[in-house]
Image (cartoon, rainbow, N blue to C red):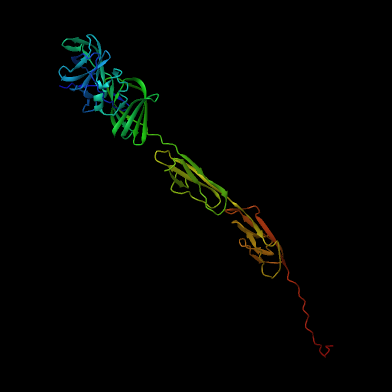
Length: 449
């Protein structure tokens, strides 16, 4: 008949995980080869449970002894392994039996379950028993859910047994963990539990990946712990202070782990600074970390990155280009750089400093040379002599005399002028006088007197 008990239940505000130990096979060892039959009954209480299974509602762990399980007896520097031959559900006891070597009546004995938990070199429970686990309740039941007791041996001709009743005391807690990112379950392939200094306490390797796992935890009293879960290629972390585990307790928790911090990018943006040259110019963004795989987008408005290449500019002025660099598992980098194009130098000049015409002649032209893109306007200082078209500089002669024709230029988009005015003097003379010889008169023969 199976024995069923419940671990005490406790709730925590976070989650962890567990691992598994290798089986240890023992030979019966003795100093002088003397062997005798050992038979004993091991009593159990609520801290002594076996064959772990979770209750239907998940709130507790039940356990029972199983036949053929092995118990180690450590005495006088020896390890003898006993086998469970019978389980009595009514008395809640397991009968163990096996050969014992070189036993002495009254000799102290340490009882350990399971036998695989004992290091046959040190003759004690393995110090790394809970270091490596697989997150399965079945593995904890078979290898990690260990308990111990102290007694003496009672030896007689007919065999040997315990000199006093033995009640095995559970030495670890069991923790059921559910891992989340705060919203969704995390299917981890491993979970490492570390102490506050960063030294691993337990490593749970999970196959397949799962978000719910079981861990056998050594007792702890108000201990600070750190947790690292591997989910895909990412490492999620969590830290908790003041954690307490008590032997024989069953804890059920959900841990909202912290998402991995994105890696840092190394990005350099170079703008352009130069004089107008009628060529298009943009910015250059280079990414050195990561070496490959980053995506660079550009825009002409902060927060809007809708171009695959840098915008370019030809005209003089200060133009700001915005950029965004992204890659999975890296922090996003945004920034801006400027394209600064200064105006080129330009000049205006007039062909002749003075122009003289006679009134009545055709209006003269005096060529103006403009090497830039500035706008030229014209004016006449004496419109009684000549009027000038403001935009073209074309003259209309209105009289005689002298006037100054002035050309003024303003800086253009891409050119600026150190000298912004040129002029010439226009003289309009009166036409030359002409004297005509009068016609000859014929004298008549008649005298009017």
